Length: 183
Image (cartoon, rainbow, N blue to C red; front, top):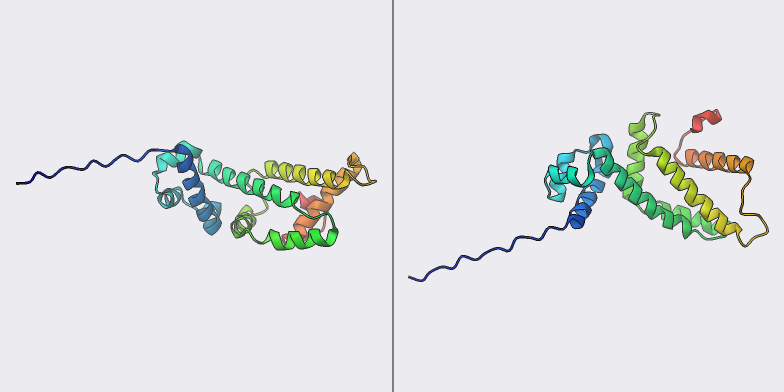
């Protein structure tokens, strides 16, 4: 009788970064499809092919996982702002054409608008600060070579922030009657 050799399967090497990326990809798909409230941690873990304990080990709570996805998506969009052309018509075309290409980001924002019910969104203050910083950096770069000073006075900065908020509110299809509704 011939003796059968038992073949040993090499254990898969564990790579925490690769596991985190798998979880993030699965979570992005789940959150963009179902929103924060509808997404389930067990579904994310199943989609990533990890157990829930590993998901919690890597990211803590569901809200922390969502924050990381938003942080990455907003960081991606910072490059989008920086690549905006200098001329107004080119900038509008760039914003229109590039703004709608990241369907997952658009769906995340739509879910937030639906789920927030007028309350602050998750990490909203952090996001606003980061977006404002990116925009003002972009504006400063554009004004650096012009006759207009890149240093925006405090009073003008307030008007600029209000203008940006109005534009964002109109873009999201919101209507308002008082400036306090922009907060």
